[in-house]
Image (tube, rainbow, N blue to C red; front, side):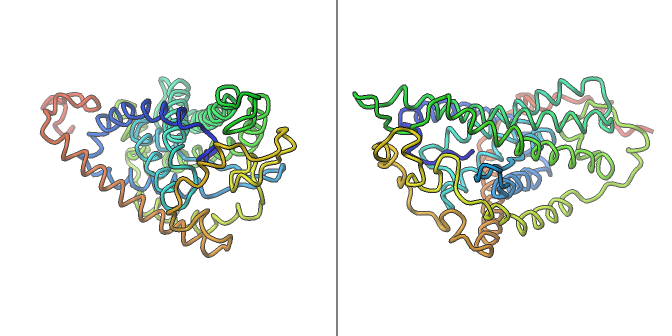
Amino acid sequence: MHIPDGYLSPQTSAVFGVAMLPLWWQAARRVKKVVKSRYVPLVALGAAFSFVVMMFNIPIPDGTTAHAVGGGLIAILLGPWAACIAVSIALLIQALFFGDGGILAFPANAFNMAVVLPFVAYGVYRLLTRNTALTSGRRVWAGAVGAYVGLNMSALATAIEFGIQPDLFHKADGTPLYAPFHLSQAIPAMMFAHLIIAGFVEGVLTAGVVAYLQRANVPLLRINAPEVPLTEAEVRRKPVNPLRAALVALGITAVISPLGLLAPGGAFGEDTPEDLDLAKYHLSAVPEGLAKYTDFWGNTLLPGYGDGSWWQYILSALIGVVVVAAVVFGTTWLIGKVRGGEREAEDLDSPPVSAAAAAPQS
């Protein structure tokens, strides 16, 4: 789902850049509550988890791969605005250090995976869990449905962005300048992999974590749902350390991340433009704009997560986790500094609590 440079016109990338700036600004405002609390490590872990999950490519029958994102899960646990920041940082590090997704295409990738996915997933989840306790079984399958729908809406947005390029940007003779596939080609190719494989993986991942937390750490589920009632049995249960559990999950996912290396090629020649089936798109050469911008950013640490060996893939995962976590801590610290002088009453996420309500209950 990562769009490389050259597949979208610079004009398209600029439009998404302008659109994302106010969204990132609003996300920074909305996560003030998280920044000022002990939950900053959870945002960092969420971003690192998203980074690793997106490396975990799943082989698809057509010879390509697809991947989950984890944005729906982060939105359920910490809110969609926190998910926006977490996934955006993961995408930025992937593009800067590993060439997974383009620098020019970064705003479009962020819109698709850090805005469309978490907000759609969270909206569906909230709609399906109205008037239910945090330990209700409905929340498990609602998380699965929300994540599935969110990922597929993100894939659809990506396909549309690909598909409109030949109509908007082409030579006088109609030859595409950037992505050469039309909507009739882009939508089926994108949606096949995500409807039948990646969406279910995203849904199972989300449902599994929600079900686990219902048994082991209900307070963690309550971070983003303080008004939702808990069942008495779950309140009395001793919670598991969420940071320890998340670190174990990150380590396991990083070790098995090279599974995607088993599937060669890509649906749109995303490894290199030369992988494109030119005859399929009635082209005699790689589109000029695609060839011009494909190597826009050549300063990656491990391009494509290494040379194809499993150990470089795992090394990339570990490096990425550390860098993503560090950037999240730095970003949240900066947000806290910039916003630190504002009055608490302006916090949109934290309504005032009376002294009586804050007092311990006997």
